[in-house]
Structures are given as structure tokens and as C-alpha cells.
Length: 404
Image (cartoon, rainbow, N blue to C red; front, top):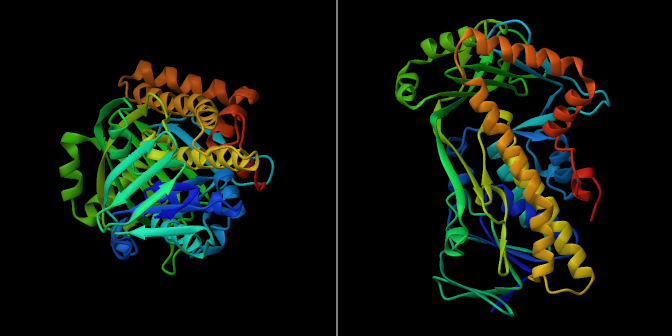
């Protein structure tokens, strides 16, 4: 039987980040995932990008992931928010010389996390591995695999995504609803430089996010996340590239000049869910298994990385005290640490989505007045900016750039 300190179900972005964080402090982890990593390495597997907050980036640097990135992320030096193309928007600028975040291609993040896991002295990755049974008993967890192998650890971590079978098998209930929208994602080439500004333009039909990427050999480029109504998604996807580029250019008011498509478009449905609890008997949930939110503020992956930083700190401190890593007290501490933050971010993004979806000139005028007010009240603006950077609340050591 193979033994480790933690068994992690899920080899996407959050699971290997947790394994790497634990490995950095001498704890061992076994990652179990049914996927074929060769498929995940293909460019076409996932054309999405992620805004990695400055605090999440500090963690990736501290645990040795950043050194495996194919290229440095594109720094975000301003976030600009607008109600359509009307005047009276809001912008956030750092005052301490550190970017608000960095844009990375998901495939680069995935490859770097996998490379860091492969380099870990205390990490074993079991790909194309299918679980046949899980026994979370009083004295430990035993996992049986289809090939006959058995794994044991004091703790099981579910990092197996928004449709987590592990969470469901544990009987953990979730609050869930779907938005009547899909997100269309792609990469645009544009005539003028983006100047490292991330734009969030709100329309009654859905928000349009424009996210700066590193320039390519053939010019400037940005990623888009365009939320459109379900009934309109097929029509948007059926447009040819020049027509879609023209619509995107109109949606952003032409401020980046001529637009062209640099990648194929894909779409995914938008939804919200939040687990009633993020821990159970010898079980902890992280990332999308615990909570999934609207991409309106680009915080989904960062919530997962904040889970990682908190859980790793709780586990490492528990190990140093000689505690059982599946001990209820440790898991309760993780639950308390993460629950309020995750819930507040989830409901803030949900509220923004609903508020900016209200049509009409009166609603628009109220929103623009509110943005102007926030822009003039420094403490409130700074609080919102700290939320975007992931530097609010009781910050785990890794998010401060400090080893555990």
C-alpha cells in the first residue's frame, strides 16, 4: 500500500498547487487524476487565460512553480470599469509598485504546475488512474484504484472540479444556480497597445472583459471573456472571424484600433455554486469543488489558490505539532479561515452581475453615480482594489510571499 500525508483527487491547476505547497514544507502528496496529461499539454485543449492576482503570484513564486512557466505573465497595471461606453467609469491603480495581477495562459500554468510536481521529492502523480472505492475511516483514508493499487493517507483533498464526485459522495450539499449566459473566450489582436490595462465593460446583455496579454511576434493582443445570453451564444459563435472581430471592436468602442481574431472561439456555461461546508470526515474541499463563481472579476482561480495557501499552512503547522493531519480541529480551522472570504467574494460577484444586468437609463445613471462615488472615497476604492489583488483579510503566509 502506498502511503502519503495527503491524497489529492484532481490534477488540474489547484491540486498540483497544493501538492507543491506541501512539498515545499516536507509533506508528501499523491495526486490522482483519470485524465491523460498528453491531451492537457495540447494547445487546443484549453485556450483560456487566467488573471492571477499579485498575492497568488507570490505563492507560485514561493513554492517554486513560477520558475517553470514558459513565459512571465503580462502584468496588469490598471483595472478600468465602465457602464457600457458611457462616461463616468472607475479605475484602480496600484500605489506600491506591484501589479494588480498577471495574465497567464491556462496551458502555461498547467504545464508549470505539472513540472513543479514532477520535480517534487514528496509528490507522486498518478495519471489515467480510476478510483473504485474510498474509505474515510476513523484512523485514515484508504483509496482503491482500478488497477489494484491501494493508497492511504490521513487526509483526502477534493480538487476534482465543480462537478466533484468526491464532494457529492460525502453528502455535502451545495447552493447552486445557473446564469442565463455563456462566456465566449478567445484572443484578439489589436492595432494599439493595451498599456497593461484590464477592461471590464458592463452591458445589460452581459459583461465584456478585455484582458492584456504579452505581445506576440505579430503585434499586440488581449484575451476576451464576453458573457452573452444563452439564446444568442450559437449566433455569436457562428459568425466568421471578421464579423466577430467587428462586433468586438464595436463593443469596446474602437479604443484599441483595428481588431482581428488570433484564436478560435469557445464557450462555456456560467453558473454559481457554494458548498455548505468545505470539510468533512478526513476530507477537505479546495477550488471549484468548494465554490465556483461568475468570471466577472476574474477571481475563480484565485479563490482556489487562497484555499491552497490556507490549507497548506494548517496542515504544515499541524504536522509540526505532531497532530493527525485528518484531525477535526485542523479541518475546522481551515473551514473557519476560508468560508467567510469565499462566500463574500462569491456573493459580491453575483451581486455585480445582477446589478449591471438591469437595463434602462435610470439604472445606468445610478451605477455611474456609484462608480464616481467609489472613485472619490479612497478607503472604499482601496478595499476593492485589495480584494482584486487578493490581499484583504487574514492572509496566509504563502500569499504574502513567505514560506510556511
